[in-house]
Image (tube, rainbow, N blue to C red; front, side):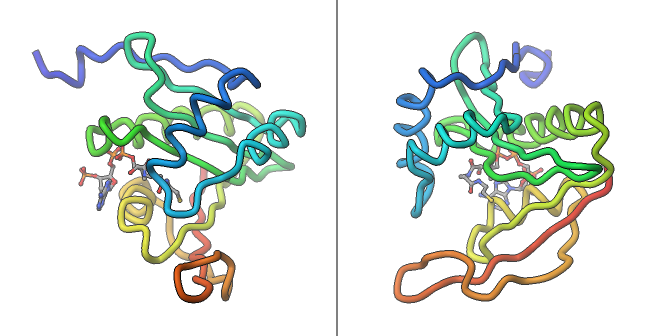
Amino acid sequence: MNAVLNRRLDYRPMRPEDVVDIMAIEKRIYPFPWTAGNFVDSLVSGYSSWICREDGIMVGYAVMMIGVEEAHLLNISIVAERQRAGLGGTLLGYLFAVARAAGARRMLLEVRPSNAAGCGLYRRHGFVEIGRRRGYYPGHGGREDAIVMERGL
Ligand SMILES: CC(C)(COP(=O)(O)OP(=O)(O)OC[C@H]1O[C@@H](n2cnc3c(N)ncnc32)[C@H](O)[C@@H]1OP(=O)(O)O)[C@@H](O)C(=O)NCCC(=O)NCCS
């Protein structure tokens, strides 16, 4: 049987006690990781924040802000060992469903042009570039622009 069909994935809301484990992942997979405070603030603000587990083990997480008719994806991450196995796309699909159920009609996000995996994931799943934010991110040796992308839900 296809390995994809064998996966046992589930999703549960992120909790404050997850932040220590999340930070260990975050520091490995991003050149400029979020801080623990960014995750705590997201939880305090009531952002739609999720843990994705495979056979009970955390393999990814995501944070999304849902406003009137619009969802803004703030963080989507898959552990290094399980990247490029379809999990990011599956987690994204879950977030589409959550956002749609909350009444959102479109999803927006920012991504670094240098982030090939992020740009690839989003394009593969129907996002299109709608603009740029100049010098949005800190970078090594200067600031880096953000590509703003959008997808209907
Ligand atoms: C971006 C990320 C979430 C993608 O998750 P993933 O589980 O590896 O992605 P998937 O296996 O579902 O891949 C879906 C598509 O994304 C693209 N993609 C994924 N990884 C890629 C890579 N390293 N290079 C280029 N394209 C890539 C491909 O189009 C891929 O489809 P394909 O495998 O059929 O070619 C993951 O790489 C990650 O956590 N990266 C570090 C954190 C990060 O950059 N998050 C996004 C911030 S904007």
